[in-house]
Image (cartoon, rainbow, N blue to C red; front, top):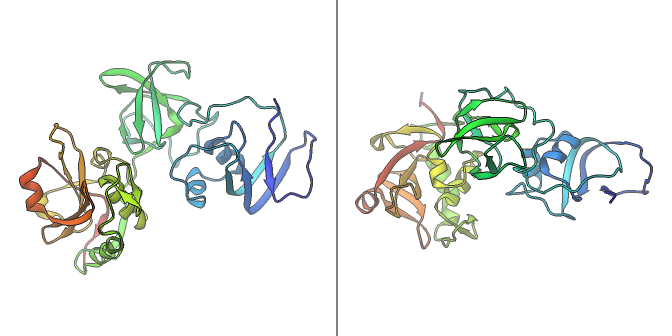
Length: 307
């Protein structure tokens, strides 16, 4: 079955097999069967993150008929195409996206896809052993052009190399500790969302869960965090509780099952703000310390010492 790509606005339909070079600041594109963000990224020469940001997308899954705004330069041709699964973890691109530096074994590496399948063998037909989510640290045992060998739950496994990247350095907040600028910025971000109801999986002011709330706050500062509290614990710099500064993350086992299940944002003066099981609210650190096992403090931002 022929696949047709539609660019809007258009003045004519072209049914010839002739590539059409398109250059525009922004092009309206209608998602066709077989499209993925990574495929469009290659065709339009636009980074995936830019497509996500430009279209305010929170996931890399696309729907047929979905309208996207794209910028860049693409060579488009109306040609037959196979039906592809709309799943970035299932269908690695033919050529991995260009990275600043190639990921090599022993380098600090994280997952760069929202969901990445872990397979028993380096093949799309191989059994799926499990999934890794965005930001999860991965220790690479062997590298390859399309697949990387890792260890998963104590056994050898493989993941698509295109969806691994270097673990980012701590982003600089460009704020000094001494003048309280970061604390003021945090208060400005948090004040409008206080008392927002708790919603499991929520990441917007319509409703937050604990890690959705911290992700939202840091997103306003231009920093993207992994999605879950356990994954957020895997990034950043470990800090002693006595040295905690506004903007640091505190982690707890609120389910008391031996695993991190809650994250809160430190605001200074022994106070945290977090999405509890009811609403977003302030609370004393000492209260949480009495109630739940404490796992530690992580600093996501890079403090610049006051002059």
